[in-house]
Image 1 (cartoon, rainbow, N blue to C red):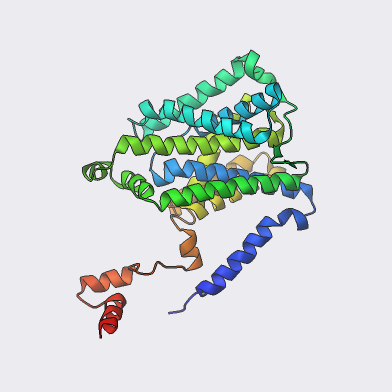
Image 2 (cartoon, rainbow, N blue to C red):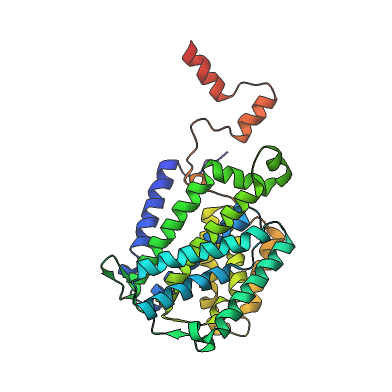
Length: 347
């Protein structure tokens, strides 16, 4: 049986890939491509935040665009009317989006499946209509224009490359949160809820607490990227945070793979680039877009990467992890390599 690349080679290639991604604006001279890359990073971060709810916890949410809009309008209003810089407005956007996550999560997460999806869809529409009709606060359909460019700890964001690096930093923060949560006892409790709520409850997992907590964290991270979106586009209006935006983010998660960080990033990159690549086929763009999703759901419903982790991609194994082959050997009464090693150490 042929073996793949060794872990050392995989890690080396991965490091080279990370360097290329981090320095992309330095060698990519076409500013249009830099802007597309920035959108890829932004939507990757949004997909990761939604994956906490849909992938790790197993609950379908169609209202993610609402939290993005709450974060965007919070940051834009504080920046425009009070002159605050980007960092404090972003932190306020995170807190307010998290507060709305709690307000929605406490009653809504008693439901599950299609019922929860309908509630979150209704919440998204309520938020959009509020943004559309509250003229004194949001300027309604006219939108908010002239939003200031971000100033981050003395770093004035001016160029497309600066926006790309800021988006990359925010995405790395979200990746850090998602990976640490998934690898902690909290993540195991969340995933037990996804697999079987009754069994998890019988084992002492507080179902409602973990659902609301996950929903709140996801909303907060989405609000953070909403703040970035407002200062990146420098113009926002309610149409940017509608149901279509929610379904686009959900499609990215489903395409890449539910419950996996690399999958969310890959799905977001593909579905961010695809509309731009098909711009010349405007009449057929959405047809092709939908066809790709439909084919994926038929032939690979777990997504392109499924629940694959970075460790699995790099070929890194835990010290005493039991592989499927070793588990099968245990069932057959054979000694595993771990047991053989322990006997050699004892001898």
